[in-house]
Structures are given as C-alpha cells and as structure tokens.
Image (cartoon, rainbow over all chains, first blue to last red; front, side, top):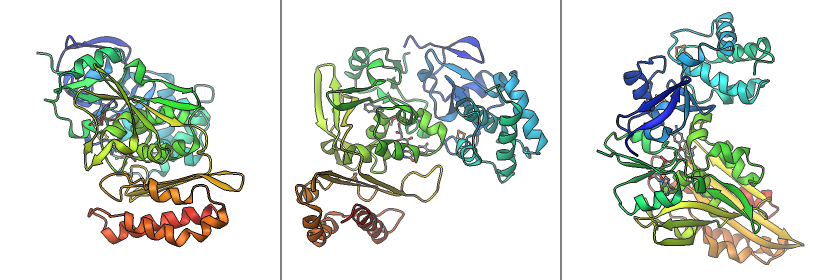
Length: 158
Length: 272
Ligand SMILES: Cc1cc2nc3c(=O)[nH]c(=O)nc-3n(C[C@H](O)[C@H](O)[C@H](O)COP(=O)(O)OP(=O)(O)OC[C@H]3O[C@@H](n4cnc5c(N)ncnc54)[C@H](O)[C@@H]3O)c2cc1C
Ligand code: FES
Ligand code: FES
C-alpha cells in the first residue's frame, strides 16, 4: 500500500493517507468531522457507529481504513440528502420514535439497509434487521412501528 | 513508513506473507475489537481467489474472505451452514465477518467452523512456496494454537455439498442477536437404504477446540437404525468420556450436561 486508500465518501472521491489501521469510525469523526456517526462501544455491540459500505450495513468501529480500497461509504450525513431518508425521518417523527437520539443515525441506516433488501418486512423481520442496534430509551416498539410506516409510505422507493 | 499492506491478488498476498510481521485481515470483526492502531495488517478482504463460491467435482469451494451474508445468499450452500450463519449476531457482523477469519481466530466458539468440522471439510492453505490441503480437524492443535505456518494463508474451505441434508444444529447462547455461542452442537446422519452411510458430530465451545469425535462416531457407520439403537448406550458412554470441558464462565458440569443433552436430542430426533 503506497500508504494511501482511494474510496468514495458520501459520493465524493477521497484519498486517505493517514494510518491504515485506524478505525473508520475515528477517521469519520476526527478526520472528516462527520459526527453523525456515533461511538457507543467500539466492540461491534451497539450499532451506534453504523454506516453503509458498498450497500451493506457495517459497524464503522470494526473497519480499518486500509480495507476500504475502492469502497463506497455512506454515512448518515450523505443519506440524509435522499428521498428515502425523508420518508424514514417522517415515519420516525410520526410515532415519536426518537428520544435522546443517540442510536438514531445507526437505526435509520439499519432501517435503510433492511428496506433496500426487503421492501415489505414483517414485524419480526424488522426486529431482526435492527437487532444489532441498541437503544436505551425507546424499548424498540416505536422504532419498529416507524420502519413499518416508512415501508408503506415509501412504497416504490425501495 | 508503510504500516499496512493491501493485497490485490493471492500472489501478492503470499509474497507479503513471507514477512511474518503482517497480520492477515479479512473482515476485521475480531481484530478491530482490539483495534490496535500500531498493528501492521495485510488486507486480504478483496483478494479475488478468496472471494469465490463455486461447486467443483461435487465439492463446494468457499473463499476465505466470503462473508456470512454471502453464504446466506448463495444458492449452492447447504442448509446446515446457512442455518448456523443465520444465527450469527446482527446484520452488520454478518456483512463483515468472514469464514477465513472465523477459522483463523482459532476460537472453539466459531460457528461456521463448527459446521466445517462436522462436514469434515478441508482447508486449502497456501504460502509463496506452495499449497497444501489439510482436513480442518487437523488445523486446530490446541487453545489458540493452529497448524497454520507463519507464511501461510487460509485460501479456501472445501466441503461436501451433498449428504448434509439430514442434519441437526443447535446453539445455546446467553443473549440473542449478539450471542457469541456459549455452546453449540451439530450432527449429521446420512442414510443409504436402511444403513447409516455417514454419522458425524461436532461440539463447539465445550473444550479448548471444537470437538469432532470421529473415531467414536464411526461405530454407527454401516449399521442399520436398529443396530445403531442397540449401540446407543455404548456410544453415549464413549462420548461422555471423550468430552473434557474447559473451565469458563459457565460451570464445567453445566457445559458437559448441555453438550450431552444436545447429543441425546440429536439421536432422538433422528430416530435413535
Ligand atoms: C458483536 C460481535 C458478535 C459476534 N458474534 C459471533 C457469533 O455469533 N458467532 C461467531 O462465530 N463469531 C461471532 N463473532 C466473531 C467474528 O465476527 C467472527 O469470528 C468472524 O468470522 C471473524 O471474521 P473476520 O473476517 O471479521 O476476521 P478478522 O478479524 O479479519 O480476522 C480474525 C482472525 O483470523 C485471522 N485471519 C483472517 N483471515 C485469514 C486468512 N485468510 N488466513 C489466515 N488467517 C486469517 C486474522 O489474522 C485474525 O487472527 C462476533 C463478533 C462481534 C464483534
Ligand atoms: S461503536 Fe461500533 S458497534 Fe458500538
Ligand atoms: S433514542 Fe436514546 S438510545 Fe435510542
């Protein structure tokens, strides 16, 4: 590795030249100042650090920068500019699925990845889809409801 | 200062591997929990030879960097492996975690490795100087002690893809979505006519390595169900003596009891 990693971040070409062993989470927050990605555990347990890599949900705390050669990374900042986000945001608001908000960027990206692969999930499938994302506040029911509403209202988007 | 290297091909990866300082990195879901920023990784997650899933000569070849999600989505993969992979953690872990890393971490809790053990899979190991095929059973020498040479990489897992249909799989975990298995069991009984053609069991997280009592299982092979039933007590006794559980967070007696109960359930479900 000539010590540089070329990848796309929220659609923009990036060349990363810092330490390849650094966590994507730290690079996002400290290097690229994208603080919508949260840090809850650095152990893959909480999902607060969720991002989308090549269309799939990843825990950014468990990704080393050097592994991202050629990858397409989307954070909540990038996703928030999409039509799908608008539908999810409205659905989360409708059922008051947000309390402290710490888990929400990750939850929204997990919701997006679920709906992208399964546009009409059952309640059980929604629970499995967000099973890697912990929420201390809501007890999950409102979040599950929000994803269901988004699936309905966003018919055709996913 | 070059602190990590990215391999574009197997050849390149193996050249780097001549120098033991590089740590192979597939999905990072084990390595990054530690997250040592001073680590020198050899990124193999995009090596094309390690990304393949294909059937050749009635054997399924799975590249080491194939992820759990890719296994779940592949039509060629036997159900027993899919069931075990479907039980693993949460979507984000399944998307990143690979079978090569699961085997390479040397853990007796590794869920894909349990299935590869019961299926008597082979590992294709390679170094810049050549390749070898090793039965996975011989790969695990002891606690965190693998038969992997310092210049070798796991390239592929090669397993039968037929004859695994009549299986039993159970994972008894402490938590649900993110449970790293406390204890797991897989069994296979393949019948041909009224005779048992193959009989295999494997126990995860009960000892330092995944246990595969091949010699004991062999007493069931070639028997009719009636004959096997008559051997059941003798068989169970032999397995009971074979399992020497580790002292872990769960008490030794508990581990062994659960392991034996899963085994008995397997026998019953399969009519023995
Ligand atoms: C929250 C969480 C939940 C988890 N749940 C489960 C679970 O339910 N079941 C389970 O089995 N595991 C679980 N794991 C553990 C982990 O996800 C798996 O072990 C996974 O298979 C590791 O693969 P990886 O590609 O991410 O490994 P990596 O972290 O990249 O590597 C793991 C080890 O293998 C070595 N290695 C990697 N590739 C090769 C290669 N090609 N040749 C030789 N050595 C190699 C590495 O050097 C390292 O020592 C969990 C982990 C987390 C963080
Ligand atoms: S910070 Fe990554 S999963 Fe918790
Ligand atoms: S809203 Fe507070 S953690 Fe989920």
